[in-house]
Length: 65
Image (cartoon, rainbow, N blue to C red):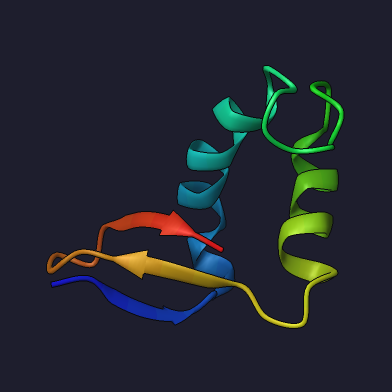
C-alpha cells in the first residue's frame, strides 16, 4: 500500500534523486535543464503551499507532488 504524507526536510535527498533526471532533459517541466539543486528545492518545496511524498510499506519514497 502507498502512503501519502506531507514533505519533511529529511525527504529532500530522495526527492532530488527522483526529480533531477526528469528536469535535466528539459522536456517535462518548464524549468531550465541546468536548474541547480538549490533552485529545484525552492520551486518544488519552498514556493508551493504544500509538497507531498508517496511512500511504500518500507517508507521508501516512490514519488512526490
